[in-house]
Amino acid sequence: MQPIANTQQAQAWNGPEGAYWADHYDRFDGLNGGFDDALFTAAAINERDHVLDIGCGVGQTTRRAARQATSGQAVGIDISAPMLERARAVTAVEGVTNAVFEQGDAQVHPFPSGGSDVVISRGGVMFFADHAAAFTNIGRALRPGGRLTFICPQMPDPHGESAQAFAPVNALMRESSPAARGMMSLSDPAHVHDVLTAAGFADVTTRSVEGPVRWGRDAGDAADFFFAMSPVRFNLDSVPEQVTAKAREQVTAALRRYETPEGVRLRGAVWLVAATRP
Ligand SMILES: C[S@@+](CC[C@H](N)C(=O)[O-])C[C@H]1O[C@@H](n2cnc3c(N)ncnc32)[C@H](O)[C@@H]1O
Image (tube, rainbow, N blue to C red; front, side, top):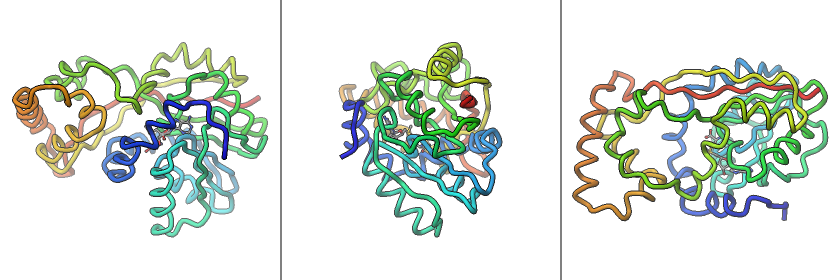
């Protein structure tokens, strides 16, 4: 058994929230995949690289890294058994043979020292109780001169498309669901800089990257997914049914403005963070 420091997160991502994500991973890839090109351009993975993907989930980014590192390897690490089970199954179906997955808490996982050339993460590094300890441990996994590149959420823009479309529900949200706790912990670039510097990284940069967030085929499908997501259900469980029904109508109507031939797409923005191990 590998060591676990983040027991609350381990429980949450191994419970119903992790299982829901694993069962609907293609929908979550639609939400997050619009930022992949920026992540992979910054990571500049070459064919011989050994890549480590932190909080890899169902592993879409691990597989893309493995496809780029044709003579190397990509290792995805995640704390969630249901996510990894799905990651291995999808990877086998897609025929990617140089991607492997390990279960562990990246804050304390005994990574081979200096074994990776590149560390990437698409939204898998915000959930650590002790950021400095976690990024120090992740830094140890990198060889000297190795690169860390990840994306993480920004604080929601109150005038952005998501805020506008989901405003009727946002007013009903009281607190984060168990798996979402920590989601916004790296949303301040100054904090990211301090944490990574304290963890021994150099050349820390953070820049805003915009991309499309794909919610569904049409407004109805997008609203169905939004209202089924664990963080939303967690908050609406105690809200009277007619209030939820009204909010759902309003959200569906608002999402119609964003229907395109490729489905419902809202503009989103994340932080793209890069750093090196001296
Ligand atoms: C927001 S999801 C992102 C998943 C994936 N990177 C993607 O883009 O689809 C966050 C992931 O981080 C994982 N996670 C949370 N805390 C972790 C930890 N301490 N160590 C490793 N993985 C962790 C969760 O299990 C989950 O799969």
